[in-house]
Length: 49
Image (cartoon, rainbow, N blue to C red; front, top):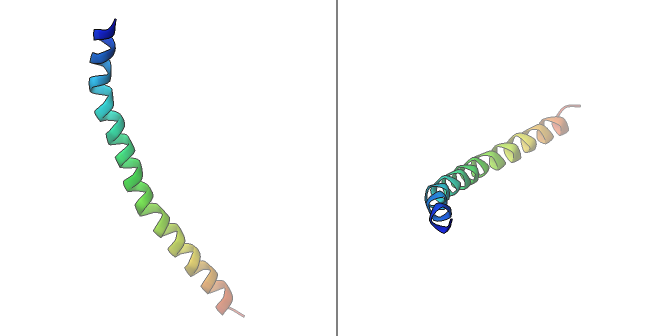
């Protein structure tokens, strides 16, 4: 049973790490875009009479 558990974790660990790294790369790109579009939208709303 322990050998099966170790074999399962040996290939699941890299997949989990890759998904985690992919999520954080996505997040590092997404939040500046959201912040930029929000600041442009707030600025455009203030300038119009």
